[in-house]
Image (tube, rainbow, N blue to C red; front, side, top):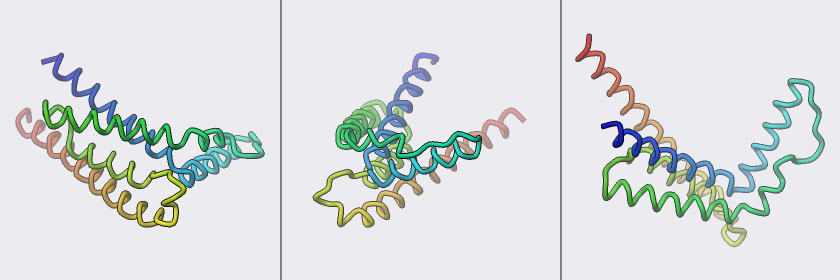
Length: 143
């Protein structure tokens, strides 16, 4: 039982890494993260000029590619072992779509954000609902 739980946690972590890598693959998202980091550091009194995460632009496509590969791995595990939440796969798929980093399709970026964002929000909503239902069910049986 503990082995199955460990495998589930590992698969979930792989999916989370996939989603994080896909987010970092989008220049606009990286830019927003940089601005947020600068603002956060400014609040605590540290001043930064420039963009501290600008180096991520150089590796955006490799990061996004890693995210796609990890999504493939987690999808395979879901299909073969059913040990991963399909809702997390939907969330990660949405993040990957929203984070498409290729300059040739940049004119479609707002469409990717809408489609990917909707998929990610839907997946996250279903995941949270699933966790709350499990928690409610456990309380009902132990209560």
